[in-house]
Image 1 (cartoon, rainbow, N blue to C red):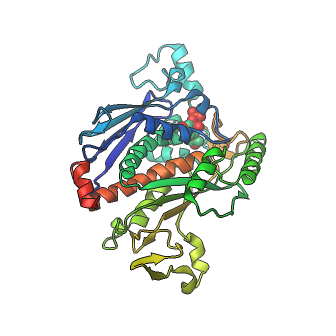
Image 2: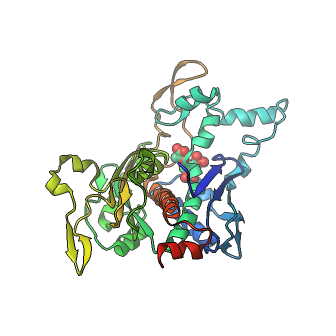
Image 3: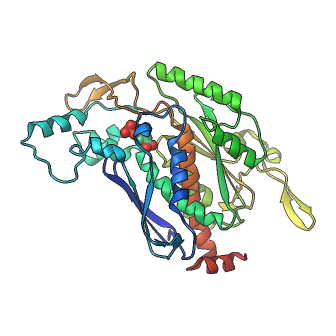
Length: 388
Ligand code: EPS
């Protein structure tokens, strides 16, 4: 499929920096680093995050494609420096290092590991790329790369904002603690979730979630959970039913499922739709003041692979982080003997952060489809095509 908003990222978890190049953005759109940085800050938050977040204050540098705060239509290059690189300069050095130096060898060996972490990319990654040192797999498979993807998503959101399309996210579940309360006011969901250390709009449930994280941490364990992302003011007709790879629900599922640790993605009523009668599931149409309206949104804003003008509701489940202080039984790929899984600094729970990454990832899909439908080389053209 021919993407309008194309991007690639690069960078390792403990390498020098993370980069992205974005292509296909019309000229004339206000995009600023401050807004990207606010998004990056939100991604770093959440009760249960590990020591890395104390080292990093993720800040983006816009390297090209924007002049005086306005896009020029040229590719945009973004960069986030990893502060932790200072501690990994030799281990992660892109250049050849002096392997006759014992200190250098010691540093590299200290960070090498061969005991597979069940649930992480270690095993399949080492088989696929032929590595003996699992450090090579960890560095790019790490969720650290979601920092730069979130920065790209913030650029997408700044474009969507021109058309009042906005997203919010809220955590629904951490481990077995669930927030099953309903709030209809999106502003309220946003404000209350933003205030909560676990991104949950209900204060009482937030406290229980924090206690659950404390418990898991004290036991050397980790926790996953569920979150919901809602986007509003999306025009009907983004995506298409004509080909499998143009269905917007498929594209959203791919974008969210590819975030590290995501195990399921649902739209609207999601898997619970399987247990409903047709008469319960489908959202009837009504006419009000000459306008076609719906009173329910079980479809979650998508019908026939296209947005239908209703709020887009995406729910996703994140598995518990596989790096555990109390390790699982595993195998050492070097000695081919039984072992305990490798442990290094990690998070106990990153569900609140993952919800922010999902906002960004969904914004990227929406802006791509938006540009495909309404097109234009400048914001002026885009607005004219959109009819505003
Ligand atoms: C992450 C940075 C990582 C982890 C986490 C996400 O930092 P470090 O590995 O240096 O402690 O905190 O990564 C994982 C949980 C994972 O499994 O890869 C980040 O910036 O989000």
